[in-house]
Structures are given as structure tokens and as C-alpha cells.
Length: 535
Image (cartoon, rainbow, N blue to C red; front, side, top):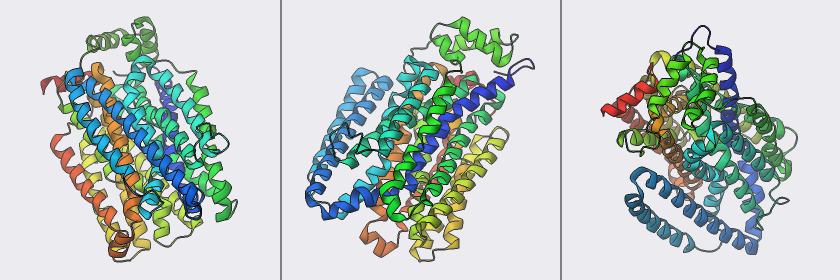
């Protein structure tokens, strides 16, 4: 799809800016936790050591919550497997998955009932990463919602759930309608936000942009969604820092963290209001049998001369709109999943969620740690702009390979700086070079590739990749405190172990892109579909 002189470039940009608010909320919601980690631990977890009876209730409810989460995720993945392989084969794979999940639940309840170091670290990781549990569910159901509700109304649902999550997370005791311990109530509200808010927005915002953007600037416009994500993170870093300045550590533990979560209601409501004025995408309207509306929107996007031709292209690619997800072979699914997994396994969200904790390990105080986190956010935003300006010129593959290698080197060096206890300016520089390498590559470019590689007739299969991304994010974010706060690993490797793991993942990510990922620069969505038909 190309934009004619009479096409609405300003109109396209306006739609893009509204859709990217979903990305901003995605970034805001995932990063708001970074300023509250220490306070949440002190408020919800550390106090349990002096209250063994309450601690036992919390641990039991935590394990029940984890068991429920495992069951829900297994069900969501099972439904994806059915869409992928058909009911018969999908049920076989799903049954195997259910057996493994059952074994994991049994092991979970076989642990000691008290609040041990291992359990406390795991509870901390689950509290911090709880929104990601919802993201897995939201990502897995995103394909269904995008088909049934459409892109626009799916984004409106996301905005509503963002708002509910923000209010409930700020007041988990007062809004404890679940009749559980306050920390579990907090976790549930974070999961709600993750289900519809982050999980849906992470899929539907780039999908919406890709379906209204001309092919020549699609990479740039989809990258603006990643810019909005990073901008949302930077905004919330400033918000968290500003809130922290209003009181001491004791005030932050009791009150400050609540304001951090409540602040999200402002961008969430703004997003909901602005969505009232945007149309549905032409591709979805054609799928829904509303070609007249689709033609009217295309005329605004590309001009009346080109609209009929593009409408015919869309109609042709959607003739088989109910085709099985493996109709184009398994490679497109595999590449989508692995792009998502590697984007998280390189450890970016450990840096973004736990940055203040990492800086405290380097010896910084609370205010200085939050200030240094702002520096990380600024670097992230700056190099995301570089990616936006170069992704349609240099291509997707070169940026991904260079970025992965840069992240690997930075993580290895950061790990050694902790191991040799040479923490200071060097460690900060390694953090910043790592962040820059991610921002110029795997941050925005992965979303560009995911929005491009799935053919129109199986666009819902993108939900598999999104679900895989959030599962990988959950694994990384949940396990980081378990590794980083482990007494044995601290004594022997001085916090360096986890960063070396992420460095290895960076090397594997570079190799994967070099060997398997196709270049999609300057190709229309229809041309990319033909590429998979040849495989």
C-alpha cells in the first residue's frame, strides 16, 4: 500500500499517534513496578517474618494463585495448540502439557509451608512479574479478540482494564473483593491489567498501525509504537522519581508506591477517550464483510485513485480467512515465536523492572537509583529513535544482528564487573551500552517483524508469538530475584551469574537472525505472504 499525493498522510499519522498510546500504556504499566520493588518487598513480604501465622496464609494463597495461573496458562496454550494443529493432535500435545503442569503443581505444594528465603524470593519475583501472567493470557487470547471485537474495540477493552488495574493496584486492601491477603489482591489486580491492558495492547497496537500504514513507511510507523513504549517507561521513571522526592523511605513503603500505580489512570482514560474518534482498520472491515466502510477509510488513507486497487488486494489475500494457522508451513510460526523468546531472554526486562535494585547493588541510595534509572530510560528512548530512522533504510536483519552482539558483550562485561566487585562508573556504562544495543534493534525491530511476517489470512497466529513473548518475559522476570538474591550465588559470584546467562542468549539471538529470519524491508504485506507460500 502506497500513499498518493492526495492520500491522507496527516490522517495516517493521527491514527498512528492514537494507536501508539496503547504502546505508551504498555511501557508505563510494565515500568511503574521498577520504582516500587523495594517498597512492595518491605510492605508485603518483609513484614511477614514477624507474623508467622499470616505468613503461612500468604504462602498458601501464593501457591494456590500460582497453581491457578499454571492451569489458566495451560488452557490458553492448549487452545492455541488446537488452532495450530487441529483438535486431535492439539489435544495430545495439550494433554502432555497438562501432565507436566500437574507435576509442577505437586512439587510446588511439597515445599515447606513457612516463609523460607527461597519462597520469599519467589514471592517477590511473582509480585513484580504478576502483570506478565496476565500478558500471557491476554497475548494468547489476542487473536480471538482481534477477530471478534476488531482492532479498535480490542484496544478500548485494553484501556478499560488498564484503568481498573491501576486503581486496584493502588488500593489492594480497600478494593479487596477477592477476600485474600492484601499482597494476593495486589497480584490479582496486576494480572487483570496484564490480561487486557498490556497483553492486548502489545499485540493490537502494532497490528492496527501495520494495517493502516503504507508499505514504504510501515516499518517506521510501527516502530513508533516501540518509541511510545519506551517513552511511557521514561515518563513513569520521572513520575516515580518525583513521587519519591515527596517523602523518605518509610513514606514510600506506606504511601508512595500507591501513587505510582494510581498515576496510570491518567494516560489510560486519555487513551479510551481518543479511541472514540478512530476508525476500524480496512483489513478487519473486509474480513467482517463491510467493504463499503473499508473503501471509505482507504480513500482517506491513500486517496480515491488507489483505494479500489488496494481493496482488491486485501480481498484477494483474505479469501481464505479461516485457513488453518499452519497453511503457510511451520517456519513462519517458529520464527515468530523465537523472535519473541529471544527478545525477552536477552534480559531487557530485568534491566527495566529491576534497574533501581541493580543500582542499589552497585551502592546507590533510593533517590540516586531512581535517577540513574531515568538515565537508562533516556538512552533507551534516544536509541529507539535511531532505530525508527534506520529500520526502513538499513533493513531489519542487520539491526537485529548488531544489536544482539552488542547486548551480549555488554552483559558479559556487566557480569564480570559484579564478579570482580568493580562496581561503579564502568558498570553504569555497561548497562547503558546494553540498553542502547537493545533499543536500536530488538526493541522496535522485533515488533516490526512480528507485524509483517504473518500473512493476513492467519494474522491471528501472531497471538502465539505474543503469548510466547510474555511467557519468556515471565520466566526471566520471575527467576531474576531467585538467582540474584540467592545467598550461595551472592557469596560465590557476587551477583554476576544472571548477567552471563543473558549474554549467552544475546549470542544465540544473533545466530538465529543470521540463519533463519528473512529480510522484509520494502516488501508489502502481500509480497511477504507470497514469500511464505514459496517455502
